[in-house]
Image 1: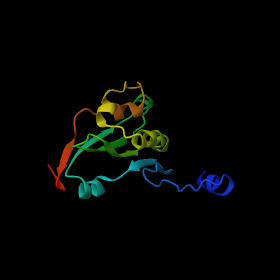
Image 2 (image 1 turned 30 degrees about the vertical axis):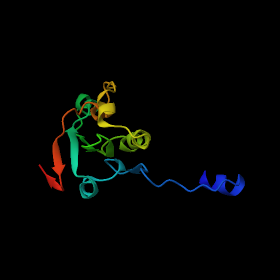
Image 3 (image 1 turned 90 degrees about the vertical axis):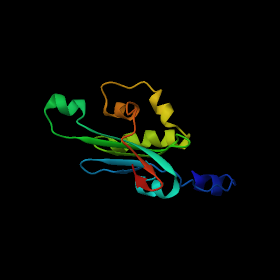
Image 4 (image 1 turned 90 degrees about the horizontal axis):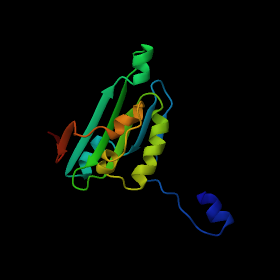
Length: 141
């Protein structure tokens, strides 16, 4: 779209490379948007890290052993979600939708106020109410 705007509509436009959702369509799938925990620790005084590892309900009902891991990285001062990382089925699809949210400046409180869609793996993103751990001045506490 930037090329079309620039070349055909005489409206010079540069692409925004911030918060690009990314997926690796492996088995299991990986979906990510925003910065990693390690990178965030270099730039923020205090982080809250919300992490969940679980067996999705469809795996439980079918007897499959697949698991998922989800992580939200939150700037503790602003409560803004600055990273989201998912490993498991449909992680790429979830990363695309979370990308819209992060681009809009969503906070952890926005996630907490969102009704969970049950039964879905994505509901875990809005039901992680307490941080798994904190990182203060680069150190995990």
